[in-house]
Length: 208
Image (tube, rainbow, N blue to C red):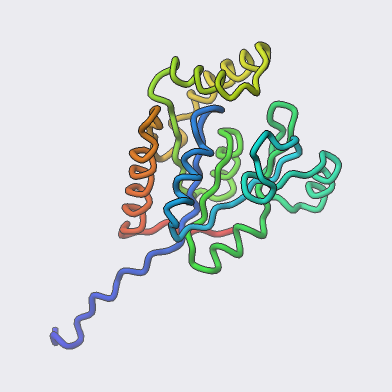
């Protein structure tokens, strides 16, 4: 073969849909905020919810907050890629955000609960699913208690739910430990995973 015709122009990374999930209180929000603080070239999807904002949460940044009635209206208009009723509140991922971000060539990163991750995997089998876990159960329970948003009853519900969610681990592609005081390590690992996925010989093809 003529050396002049030999081309190594084979690296064309495709945008990924990256799904960050895990039990309540595992630190999904903290991981995403650290990734945003680093200024990474990723589109962070903002989930819509029907629950009221917690202290220091900002509409359009942490979530899009809306009423229960409006959320139901959007459901009837088929405006969500996925949605679920979680702890008596609706959460959902708007379609338009995903399509616009992928069209721009950016990776799309979503923070969803385990139920939502399973739905997204069905809708988009090529999505990259990452499951966050705490270093141990004691650490995880302390995080939930320190949030001061849980009653004794709701904490018991979340603990039982987490046990069932851990059984879904084999449906994910990767697991990442988010230990106390080691947030940077968790984010570094996630970025290593994303970087490796961009170097696959047979890349994931995201179609929605």
